Image (cartoon, rainbow, N blue to C red; front, side):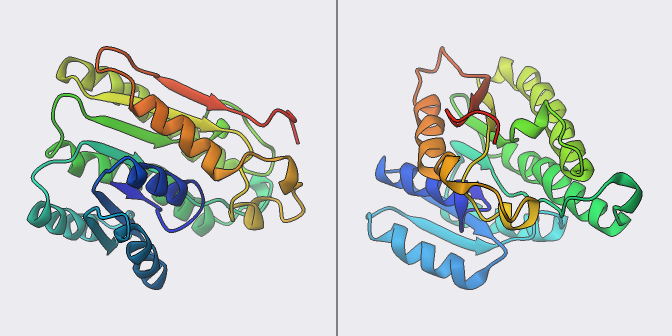
Length: 229
């Protein structure tokens, strides 16, 4: 299952997992994009469930998992990828509704989806939380984004210890600058040519998932060779 699967890193991971023969549950808020992605992935002769979901809304998450349980008996891999950013603003000028929306999406949404997924996951399963390098660094003007990712890192680390006895691996993905649409909000003039491609990040994630059950990558930090942009 991949949240935020209609573009960027989420879509790249969906494509990469599909080539490995994984059946997929893809979700996002863009109905037409989901339809398009579902048609694309289904050509690889895998089962694809594409359902819109607002991960901030517990009822929407419940609807998603009701649909999932009708089609699949269990869930092997969860990719919590959905996330949003906000315009570069200092704390003194950051509107509370913007703060709230970012926290609800990046932190609350990860919690809600993970909590629902755990009932369907067995030993050998893997959870990947896309955190960004903003999970352990700070960027001036990105207070809500920084706070949401720092919080999600704390959730990820706690989850890993809780699930370790159950044989479910938890990977914190911390990609550096990656060429996705999020830069239209964060930094419209960002030098995209220096960034990682979503496909590169996806390749690293899938390689980590495919490690033997008795090994894990706990934190996967992947950065552009160009360094700080």
